[in-house]
Image (cartoon, rainbow, N blue to C red):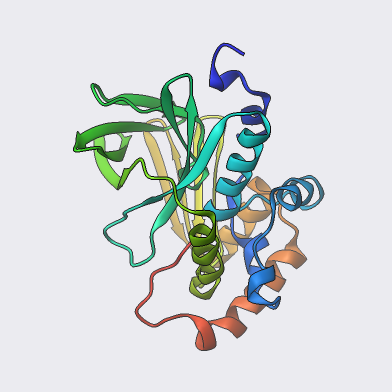
Length: 250
């Protein structure tokens, strides 16, 4: 293997969507049993077309790379607008660090550099990573020439117990069905009743529950009954468990 990108795992990862229906459906389990291990993520992807959120997908990345003998670990990112942090994976390969962030659909390794900004194009969205200073990096997205900072981070491995604690706590913040993926060069994002479809030079936005349901079934191939069950669990869960001052976790 000459380059990390050549690893077969990444051709699998790019087809696994970001979605939290699979997470919502575990709300009635005991908190410690809710996180899905990497084998469950892959088997449920085959059986139900599920994907995962940043926790389950980052865990999948880390476990899969470790099996290949590649050092990898979760990293905590600072998203200033949210109370709950974001998480992604870092891999160390032949003296370089690579960011893999399924939560932002960066499903191919993006190399970090202390000397220059690095780029990755993903359909209608470009990703840029810059070293700011003193080991701190920032990730930006670029759409139609507009730069937006998504988060900042340091290259600091997160202990497994800390990562797991955040993962278990994140279930208390679920308040809407969220899903996103790229199909060819088109970005599709759903959050509750809100739908955004972005392609090069074009963007469509809707705030309609029926549109959201249509795109979940059409572009994420999710079963209507499973979507209904997830919405029912959200309704049951909202009043009891979502912190009033909290932002949604992944």
